Length: 333
Image 1 (tube, one colour):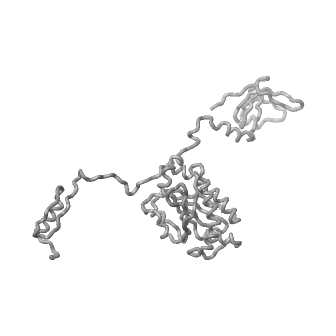
Image 2 (image 1 turned 90 degrees about the vertical axis):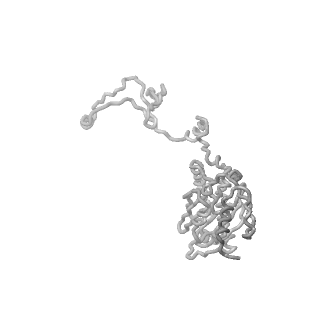
């Protein structure tokens, strides 16, 4: 068979590709197989798909999610400090959405990776911890100082078991912080230190990435949580909802009253006022009299925290001065 097509064979092939109707029967002498008919434009089913940005979190939703994980950071601070008996602070430093492939590329090394099933999320969740932080935690839990000079690239099964004494409570605190939105129950499916084994989702899938930074006297590292967007999508309305803004005016009046009723306030009584020049003030001597704007018997003004609130009459209660409230002054803008 010739490897180079003749001009006649090329013309036949071009005719086949131009055809939008039935099959083209090539010349039997050319030895070419029959070609199936091409689909016309009217036969094709087209559906628009954005392959680059299939799913996105709204700005309000992202801010709502940030508030929950900021509270999770406070819970993690208390948990890590209690488990390691060290003063440790853990802050939620970032919450962002990105491609799963980008999230994997940003993983610091070495790192310990945990594959979790968080019901009712239908897709796996990844939780990572710096091995420097975990190895120091392991040493501390086993009675050491927690100061580690050399960090191994991988953990033994025994070290993983000890590390879970810290990882488990941290996951509990994260689930606890999301209780208002969804009640999560986590189970450990796998654990490893090789990021190449963490390819549990297609690289183009959108995920939510949460970053916690833990710092102590000599312990430092980060904790990261990856939640697939597909798992969060049914809950986005709950994350974006501002529970305070949806309440009726005055709905929190009783609760606020209970909270603020024991706060101390400064209350004074103004018998009157005067306006003088600076040189007159400097010339004042004992025995000088300053005329006030208030008249004798006129109600005194009672400011609360510096703002006029009541009017009243000054009198005596035994051997002490007192005030009888006469009226409540209208609020001034």
